[in-house]
Image (cartoon, rainbow over all chains, first blue to last red; front, side):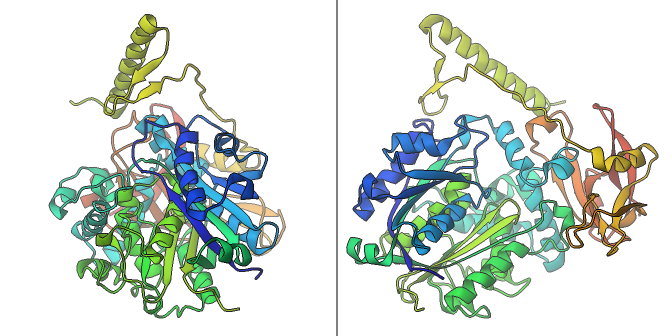
Length: 396
Length: 180
């Protein structure tokens, strides 16, 4: 399994429409914070991983553009892509490099500038992110469309309603309103959500995460270095990763994301978490709510609820602070925003601050088990990463 | 009738372009303020368009099938695995010994959505329904569904798949048609 790895510094840009900053400036916004937070200089970083999906933005080699601007040359770098889970893939790579002993301090930064292109172009790029030839070329699926296929099937099988989906948006906007880094800092009502127009029936505008510019950065270090740098290292206890078919037609069930189930199984096993009752181990979770239905699927795929009962957690408000398990206290992708390849790093940065009890009071989870979970899905369950973070060093 | 998504998109881009050109004439720079924030934006002076050339050489029989109104899949002669979309290599057997088989084109609808906000390259179509049908053979197929009112569709309803000509492009593809 290699060496233990801890997060020793985090940074997070303001998410939103960031026409005030270019791609390098926006990446630097979070990198600078992470360096300051870790108390290290660029010279201490031995390798940096840049996650960026791109296409909609102008720089084809974002890793070197960011590296030059942030003063990280001549350190080695690579750009990684796992669609909306790119950030978690970057964190996994950074983790693996340190765990294997190839480096002691590695930076992972996720950056996305989606607003460099007009909305229809962004819709096109994301719609192509599945199987371009068989499912986009002829049938023009969009990202909301892919998840709408899951929503239709889930609602039919378990009797969930459009109002239920809207309740997820209401919760995430409630916490987004309390996160100064969030794109949407206002609360919404079920009624406002229900009155929003259809984007991909049965999903409406308020069921969807927005088009977002943003960056997030984390610095990971080996145990020896981590102990020197900080009194509160946040250990990467486990990362589960899985994939599924590019063609949605190759899947048998549209009420669960198989890759997320598999990634969770792997992560729980490595972290010693009871897969039958994971919530008893976990203080707080960030899950991939690119659409409201995705958060409900996440509850079930992660084992927070039984099959068909994810929607009950929503109705009973069990994922607010004080409930069974607080989820997406950052506002989630829905309200915090979803800068595609920055999202996974953003989740890790947010959960690190949650575990250190550093976030705004109204959205701070109670930390007594010292464990947080990030669930980051790429594409429509094409990639899935489940990451377990912990205040306690994992026992071998 | 209200403007199509394509017309609105093109109009917005044309307005932006004209705005940039007028600013450029007076300042010598393609820099315009963002309408909402006022932030200075450089308007790209270069443009690329992508139109890919994608090999279908090895799955040519699939397209020959469409020309005959048939939907073809491949079947591994070794393990019997049916492949749709058709593929010419069986990764399980590591063999490339396939036979082409015609699919029944009958099955049931297992999920669907109506695309209201369309990608740029689909903006010229009215709202369209995309569904996934499970054919009798046990394989699934993604396609447009010939019904744009989701209330008239139901998971589990009988459907058939027809080869159709997609207009205005005028090329052969296939479509799911409610059969109840």
